[in-house]
Image (tube, rainbow, N blue to C red; front, side, top):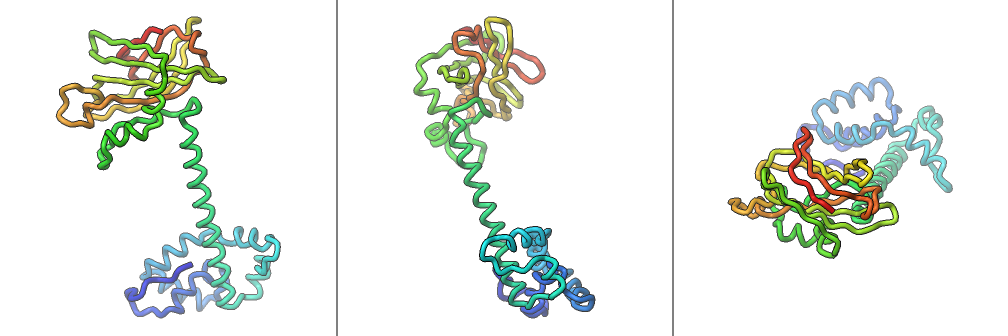
Length: 261
């Protein structure tokens, strides 16, 4: 665990900062604990470290069970009062294991995101969110747009009343149908869903999304962001030949456009 930056405010010495590990383990006596708590009230760094070390005892118990670990059992640690050097080692080891856990969690999330295009999952919008990424770059890297570009089975529809137009690209999967929606001339704010309606009358929601104030695919919009269509994808248990049509519906029940298959 890295120490505080040089030049920390207040007159506390390095020893007071190092006490955070012993305090987290609960091995300070009453006088030492009272002194550290007075320091903690004015030291943001120690407060942050203490927060990160919350609940450390169960983790130390797990470390003690590791092969070759020199970490004593929790009961022994608390009764024997480890030396400051051992406390620092334990705290550093726990901090490193927490960092490793966070890294593994990130990699798992990234791997799951990479699989989105292969299954019936949540929608991905290709247009920018105002964070500075260009729409053109988003289109080039979006799984939904990339899938739309290579799918050859497509159906389109336009609602003369709402002026909303949609194209749905489809491909068969072992689990049903992978569908990508291209939506144009829709204004916001709005929340919408793409619904597949089977020839048997059953309905399945493929995916849902929010439309921001500026809308999507507006031909005469002032910004490039608003002129770009929306691309979202998802999946249905229906096979392509079991689908009668698609509907784009708002959450309050308004039908924006139908697309016949």
